[in-house]
Image 1 (spheres, rainbow, N blue to C red):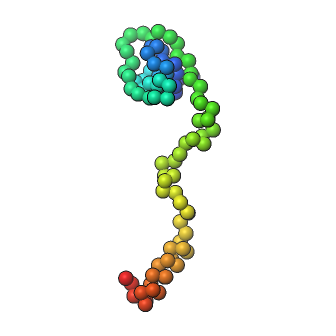
Image 2: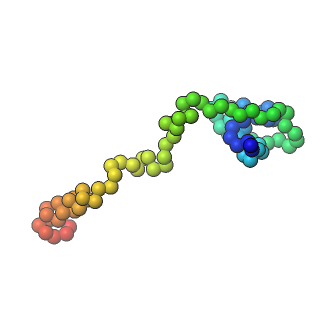
Image 3: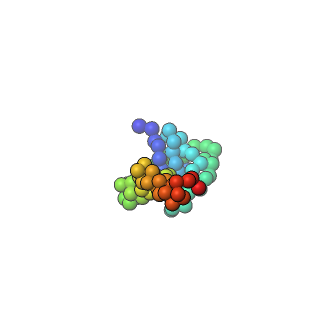
Length: 96
């Protein structure tokens, strides 16, 4: 299995480092603060160990879809048609 995700920093510089396809990336984390730090040249000093996800994040309830802010009532064609006809009726059969 190839490492993918947060692991202890194999260089010992940060609490965690993102590994992608088994290779350390520049994405690092200390506590809840994420930042970038290019992996140093040379060999690693420790074997990376997977960092367990926080229990609250494991169930996905903390995740939001990009379109959540736009989500409201589902589209209702009948409601739209009634609104258009109401405007048409208010204007005496003429479009505004």
